[in-house]
Length: 332
Image (cartoon, rainbow, N blue to C red; front, side, top):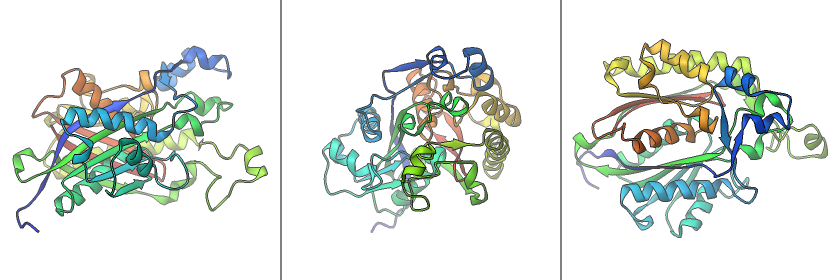
């Protein structure tokens, strides 16, 4: 094993959202709501919904191919696949193995992890650890979810919030410190709040039964007020802490990319960090809450519009079920 220190470089980013657009007016036809009510409370105008025959791994594969194309590598160059998801194709095997099969690569490790909307930051930490321990050279990190599969379309308080999508990042080892893309990562969790955002049935605690199906307990359940309160508090403090411990302020980053859960949460974080709105990326209006992929989709949109350029620094922060949270400062 080499003694030289190894750093982690972002080679390419890619994202995918399904073609089907579901607007707020479309939702008004199935639940008692309105476009004005949804936009005023969430900032969402529309979201993308996968076809019935599309799985989470299908979304992930599309994002992965785009990331590899942007990284100018082939699938044969990848030596580890990491997938963050809460909507696995099946309870087992892992979604990563389905991704591996569909990409046509064999014999490399495949790992799933479940931290909900904090998947980007947790995935970056896992990938960085693997790379800097010199175990792996190129890692395909994917975050993807088909949230429409676990959304209760009879519950107007939650069905308006979510969309489907996937994002992927190719990470590579480099011995050049100036090419290091990960300045810092901060993670956390608090299991005392597991009940405020969860899918109650389908696991070992409550296996599927006639009663669980009738009770619609295989769908996502959320205590909206509790989630909002904790998200604003934790994401704000998490973002400030990672800046402080690196001797930085929000003025030292070019963009702030938060988890796209609710426009009011995003704006509260912006006010907490005291950054101008033009430095905060917002995609929730077009895609809704796509769980862990939302930050990657937002970063991909900034790259696609040539706003992120070589040397750009991005602060990204997320919050999800668990409760889990994470922040990362990235350099492109």
